[in-house]
Length: 130
Image (cartoon, rainbow, N blue to C red):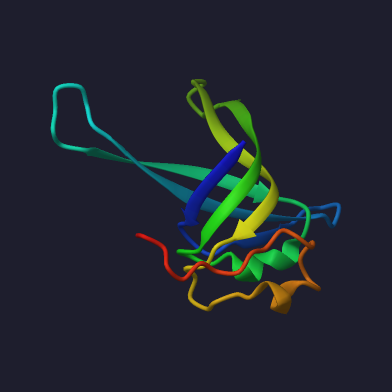
């Protein structure tokens, strides 16, 4: 599955008990549609929590507002809350990340090639239509 979205906050790296590291972040997907019989477009924003396990070094480039292209799969977490009610949440398990710019500081692929897997970054796009 592919998602193109903007980060809602800076990414956070968590270290687990077994010393593995995961990069957690959230993205917002903007969409719009026109309801049947209406001339007004309705805007819809969907927030998705994401996790990336391959390389924690990329977290420094995942800053609020950065446009990213993510490839991965959706996972479901089902649980019971304190009142015994069944709850669930979705998490996007990211396999590949492409940065498209829009962060606080521009990123060039050649600057991060040693710390990020080759082919996972692209140069920032400066002429985005939005």
